[in-house]
Image (tube, rainbow, N blue to C red; front, side, top):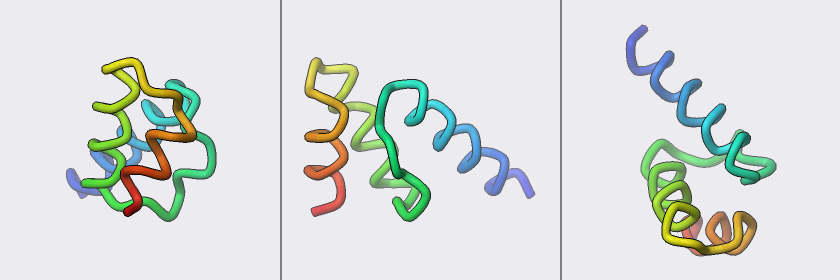
Length: 52
């Protein structure tokens, strides 16, 4: 259950960062997108890059 809670928390952080439509992203993709946003990339561009 800890993994599920952690994934939910990552999805919430992504939503708060402006990464919309993140429900089908994996944990690794979410982490990558959040890292990219933290580095100044636009949220939707970060999402696209992380999903590649």
